Image (cartoon, rainbow, N blue to C red; front, side, top):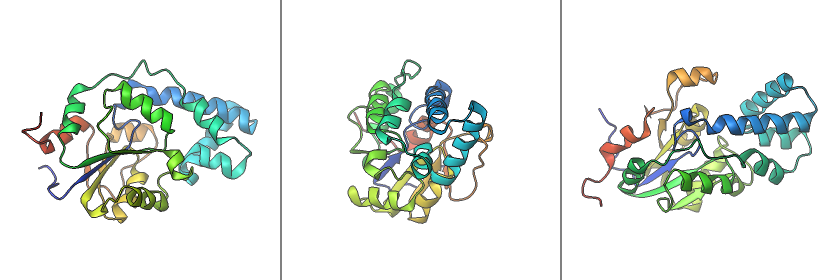
Length: 225
């Protein structure tokens, strides 16, 4: 049975591997860029740099946050180098565009990615003009999800009542602080893909949506153009 979302007036989406399927492979390209940047920044061979990068993700939320806490790196250089990847693998999704447009209320993107990356991806998958705001890593002062202060800052910026908001993300730990603030939370990943990433669903999740379009369709306004 679908969740009762009649109280929701703010729909908040993560970007990568949420607004498009992980099978389209964009994050693999970004991960390769991150690996190369890590090796150069920390002076370690690939295997050791990869282990350290995963440690940074677990402890700091993003690779960049971990690098900034431990090494002298240029954050703007990092954001440009790791996100400036070809978008050929991403497919336009007109059905998702129509469905998001028909959701009752405002729509937002909340991403740990760079602002220019968010703009490129949104345009590529055909969602331009559908969002009332995009909150990227630069808007977080480089303090990424799942830091609670990042969610509070986002909610305050756009005057969102968290008890009337729903948040979609493919990373379980990013959903926990959102739920603690009163947001309804939806995990946009499958147990199999989570296992491949070394993650488990855990607590703090109200529903799962391995197919975002299928999940959203019942909530779209039937008389929308």
